[in-house]
Amino acid sequence: MKKLISLLLAVLFVFTLSACDDVGNPFVDDGNDPNPVSCAPGYIEDDGVCVEEVTQSDCAAGDMLVNNECIVDPDYVAPEFTELPGPDYNDLGYDDYEGRDIVNSDCSDLDNIGEWQPVWCEEFEYVGLPDSTKWAYDTGGHGWGNNELQYYTGSDIDNAYVADGFLTIEAMKEKFGGKDYTSARLITKNKAEWLYGKVQVRANVPTGKGTWPAIWMLPTDWEYGNWPDSGEIDIMEYVGYDKNKLHSTIHTGAFNHSIGTQVGKSITVQNMETEFHVYEMEWEPNVIRFYVDGDLFYTVSYDPDDSSNVAPWKAWSFDKDFHLIINLAFGGNWGGAMGVDESLDHMEFQVDYVRVYQKDYAGMDTQNPDPVSNIRVLNQNPSQSFVAWDVPNDDVMVQHYEVYINDVLHENATHNASIIPAGLTETQVVKVIPVDFAGNKGLPETLTIDAPTTPTVGDRVQAEMYITMSGIQTETTTDAGGGQNVGWIDSGDYMTYILEVTETGQYQIKARVSSEALGGEFSVLQDNTEIASATFTATGGWQIWQDKYSSVFNLSVGTYEFKIKSEGGSWNFNYFEFVKVN
Image (cartoon, rainbow, N blue to C red):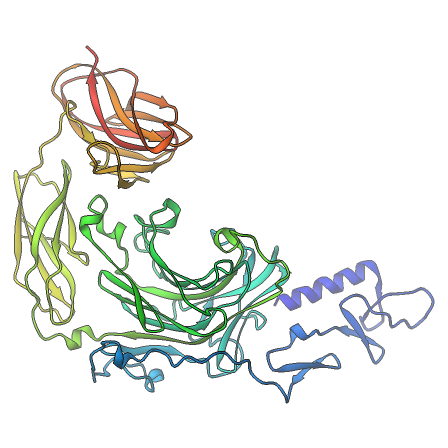
């Protein structure tokens, strides 16, 4: 398509500045020859007619340019890369498993890897555009949230093609769609999605400052909301200025790079740009493992003890369908962090194969799970209790947990945690039953939760003990007393608290805050009516804490919802107290 657009623009340019002969061939009129054959830029003369000039870059791999035509080069030898034997999974601790009940017929020549059976595969054993039954394209040049420099094209043989057993994604220096570079971003969305699996991609990354290839996954239906709430799994990212460094990362609402809390690991892998390597991810309930060439180098899992301040899905959103993405970006916030090499005009990201494996969890499971253990309350406020438990043993794996409140089903939780809303009774009995993929159930385990007491305005209230919030994240504090503080507070963020006023009078809020440079401003609302505000200057550091006071306000006896809302600045918040003025 872009070639057609370029041709139309060229023709328009020629018509504007010169002329055409009687059959529409562009030429430059020198004013003398009645039958001119001097062609406009981008065209050459062929038997008295101006035709579009073909360059070597227009030819596919293995073709050569002869008389303005791309023809097969009989002497072409496909580029050779160092061949790795690949992981020997028989030596990596995988158990033998003979079941093949979920194997895709297209992948029947692939062996199981332990209990993992091949369910989707792309070996690139054809020539032309990527297989449209397996791949679609994300297209556009809006920067992709990272100020990237390329325009992603769709079904363009210049930017994504299959030949010699490889998929090649090629970023090219050419103007198109308002960008100076083009490339491709292939996706399996709406063609293949998976919930849990083992993903293998054997690939060779490009060379050059500014290149940013990636193999990653995004949710198909975004059931938890927009990025980052619904999650992202980065199997392999590489930035050309950081040679031989592999980056594997997850992103969720609570843990992501935009707030500096992303979870991942970077390792050195020799010869990433000159050798093919197998980049691999295993994803099971509440755990993800990253490998390169069969070697496990990083494991991340859901831990309720580390994230009891947020809803389980906010910390771990990997219990929905995800699809695969393979792309080559150029420049941008990360790829171009050290600048770009503007002399690069062709950059190739090559993929040998893509394979997805899954376990037949239901077919393998024959036993009931053990009961959950160590059921406990990790966090409690007047409106809810955060309840967690240890993952029980099962002969395969637990799929979810039935959570009951006073014998009424509350939810089927995929995490080993649940938020229990405060009830009308003094106590609540929480019952948890583990369920595996075959539907086998373990014995119930119960916990009795006493109704939380409502703190009073005379108590010190920890900022992270909010009832509801918007835009709030927490971190470990170095302030006296330890624990956590609320961090990265920006304008519009807020926290709500339910407090009891036991004595009528005038009060101020004493807030324990910190700010590196911008200071902060907040308002105080009582049942959604503003009653006070405070403005403060920077304290000199994110963990340099000072007490700051609000304006004075009146309170009467009663129980109220109080909201502390940021009105500006950038600041952290550890705790607050209501101080009686008279």
